[in-house]
Length: 428
Image (cartoon, rainbow, N blue to C red; front, side):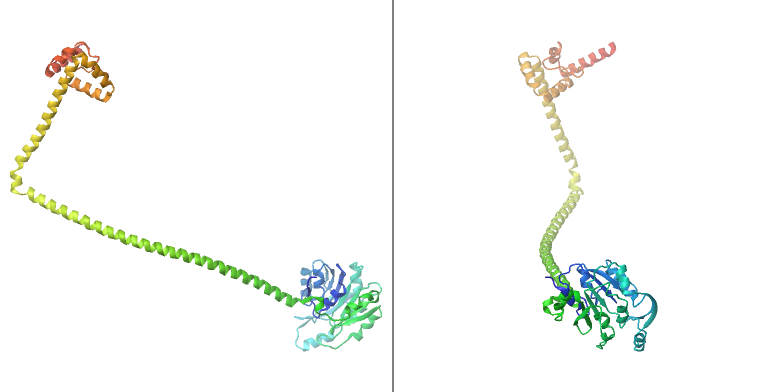
């Protein structure tokens, strides 16, 4: 069984919950309902699927009821012995608003702010009949001294609430005033079964079997908790959850901080390593600069020495000797080239007039086209062959006069070539 949350001022809802423990979807009528939650006798039942009528003429309370109890009938009227209009005295910021003019004057004399307003008045019988309620489990009346007027407008022969709960003391006192109106209930077939110090509980005689449920006041066996205590408990549970979440967050942040610290240590090591590498690089750079400066200085010294040598008298006197040496070297190279050319010409001429050598040599040269091309060009320049377009005279396919040309001297071959070219020009 779940814990019952009591919203009522004096545990009235605990007694009623015990009495109606077998009823799942009952009906209630609350005259003077006031706030929909705080000190409400019907709130716990609404949460359990009960529905009913809430009568509250104070605009602020009625507006709250309309929002919080959308499935209830919420009426901004007063109920009395007859229907019509009545002056209603609003005692601001309290639950003491009343139809009793004398009470209103006393409240004003005590410093309360009291205002008058005209509100519609209906009989309780009319309200319940118009709502078409066939059964009412309990009727609760708390109208700050006007309980007798409400009861005079209730026809208990037509409408039989199982239980009637009526506040029976003067407002804010322990003075019992139930003798002024209790006969209206008792004479209608009800018996008083419980008094809690503030309210009197009346049970319809046709439901006398429930009387034993009113035998004792609310106690630990009713498994209830006051709404204020439950609310504090919920707040404590919420705070505990928030505390757990905060602790988890602290743990998570601690892990992140540890990770960041590890990264910081690694970064510091990297920085230290980089600093060492930078120092080594700087040392290398300084050494390179020192070596570069050394060679620059050496080059400058050598340049100075060369300048001194070139400006010396001995350098000027040996100019003819140096020039002669260079020219001699060039002559030696040139003479070497001429001797090589003459040897190559003799070799080509020797091969051209000897078929036994020419054919094997041609076969070898065909495998070396680059070398063969250079030999052809050399033969043309030497006058051993005539250029004949893209294909110069080949070693193995010379014209008939090739052998004769091979027997001429280079100068004679050049003269012959010039004559042939001149004759060809004249023919064109």
